[in-house]
Image 1 (cartoon, one colour):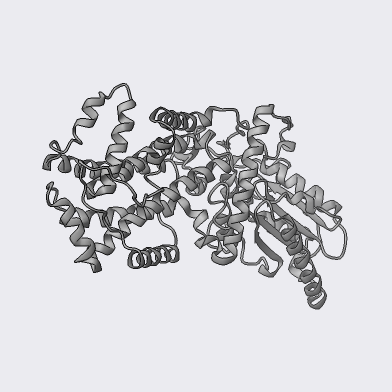
Image 2 (cartoon, helix red, strand yellow):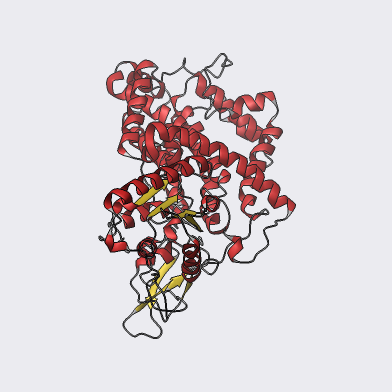
Length: 538
């Protein structure tokens, strides 16, 4: 975060530097893979940029297919295996395909869930204002695996027998389970209809708890990406259907507790814990499971970069327009009665939810450099990079610009460091988030004699603050307030999506745009609406 503005020390404790370096390497790896997929799918359809939404989509497939399977399932000890077998073989065109969809969607859900977990850690999205989402997400891993393992039991074939026995062997090790009690229900003469009724009931309740947990997980996020794009959903569904036809999910031989189940094709996504216990021991497995869970819960409380100052509301300049409330990605801003203006509202910032992104400052109508004030005070602002400082910095760089074609580049601290693009004919200003840029700054720079503006930020679908680039794109396209005025020539503006590792690509785009501007200005003799003149403030 632009520490050069705050005067804060750029040094961090060694443990923070070590963890940041480890995460930075993981983030770079993710960025390169995501950028590679962007070339084929684009940001909107890149599955790695929408793992949360993709996981929820898989969960809805699980719920829909599971409800049908439940309606036709015979929960009796004699009929459960036969009813599942009938669906797979006799009714393969409906029940069999739905069973396969259920199987492959469950594996995909687990895979996406773990990728989402690792990716959020790699991008540092687990502490501060994101602590609540991280902590509420950890129990979902337990619920997913409990539901998945229990689902295998319902079929009651040799795979179910293997999983059930392996699970009870793990439970036997826990001090609050009596070994004999935990194993007794799997004796040949103890399995009855009630066992399967309870099992199905549990398999229905746990997914409901999972849905409730997911609601809590995203409760503090506005405009949640509940589902991926239609193309991603359709492509995924077609892939599942192809798998269902090529390699349908079928039951193994019926369970027989008098025999040992061997030579089974294991589902490594869900049942990996069983061979792990065989290789090591129940004690080692529980140590790993509980240790990983404790570590995930403790991760937000381990050393990490210090939190940035939150947004500050100035009551005298807040007119209660609610734009900051509408644009906040994390529902950190609410509107309440203004203390000094009866009948008006004022924004209130929740310090526990504020991401310190500055998107609210970019949404505020008073964040315009055209205001005739020596010191620009806005309705809502960021202490570490006030809008007034942005104006001063822009004016200072504009005063030094020379050359035939002048350019201003507005960038993002989370993306490419645009300050490296600064040159004799190019001004470069880095913001906390590109969404912090008020569109009026673009017109202001053009009216001050600049020939072109480049606005850059995170890749599409990869904004570190979720909505910064999306809101910026809509504001510049006149689709969102505050929007860029229609009189601003669009051919003198470029919006560039670039991750932090694409500095060379961004530099090449800036150079190309500068060449285009130079050619256009020569042929058009420079548009008179934006003559070279300096705007002064009283």
